[in-house]
Length: 273
Image (cartoon, rainbow, N blue to C red; front, top):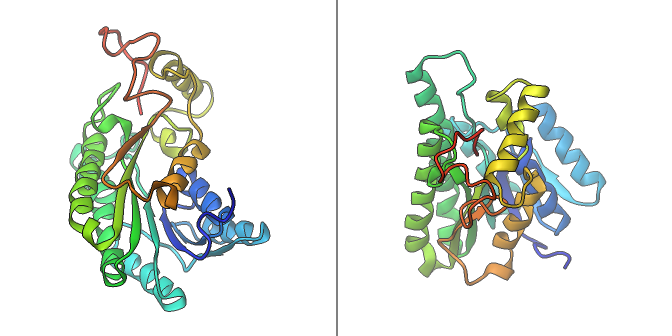
């Protein structure tokens, strides 16, 4: 299919790398006007130029930091000023701070602010406009590890679990208005997320190989494009009768056991999403 999102305006956060970048390209390829939300001006302008060169339409209004309400509102207001609407919101901004040399308290505060509060603030910056138009589509990013961990990551997984609670509570409220709210729960996906957990090169390669072999039934680490496809499905009319869904996208994680079944057998897992 082609032009599944023709004429729709989609704001994607975390769009300057990883899953958000892949989603932005996929949405643009299907006809959406994509607003790139991300902190890196260089990457934001470069992605907008890449999408435009490929025949799509994209905007980058400047740095968007989901931990700053003024920054969120600046991008939302610029989008509404130019296009008058936001049809799709995909919130994929998030980060773990486990690899940084900071205190446990600071790690907690920064992780919650980035993943939970940032998602909440972004959603509720856009939601009034969707309510006014009585239409809209919100896709929230959680994590396989929120309720199906293969290794402890207490604060990160807790912050992502909150995103799933937001999904189902909001879906219930806004369904009568014609607004759909769904959630994607990625398994291990090859993104800069892993940079915080292991050194580049042999260490991270070994970590990811172990996860793929022991925890993922399909036996491989996912790519950002593996998330972009389900995001397109949830953003399009193909899923018009779906709301409140928290969808595992992790090569079988969450639905079936891996071949090695390291988690349920009490073996030491090599890592987790």
